[in-house]
Image (cartoon, rainbow, N blue to C red):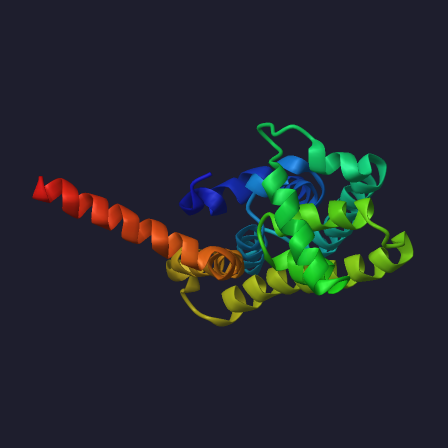
Length: 216
């Protein structure tokens, strides 16, 4: 989905479309491919311009985020460890689940809150929690807190920015790009920390191969 079209898409799909995307991204396998932070921020911005009622928008996003994570937990609870041996498909890659498992092992219950702000992780962490030993009551508390901070916080941030800065619509695309970079940054940093030496070695190898090729 081209990000410069996101504003048009949100206007087209309306409340129901926004809520459905939020739900799917937090509770279904194919949610890893959907916009998250940029969707909420842009929807909040559009609410400041009169396209949505901010109270209705935020309430729906919050409910969708809570229900989405609950569905993810249910999937993990029902499928259990079979999730980790599920064949790779168009909408599911075992590496996504492994990444979420590592994040969950490191942060514990807080991963459900922190993971809201990391693409892929926010989709898979609820499934990991359901597949593990976390009681649903404990999961629900983290789910509600995380949904409030993410779904409400990011949407309201877009609303406040659009409502207080004149002509901010001219800078909407750069702002969305910054949000996307910030969303991806934690995952990129984690990959670099875990595989930095291997990545640098591969870069050096390819550079040496190019030099040898030119010498020949």
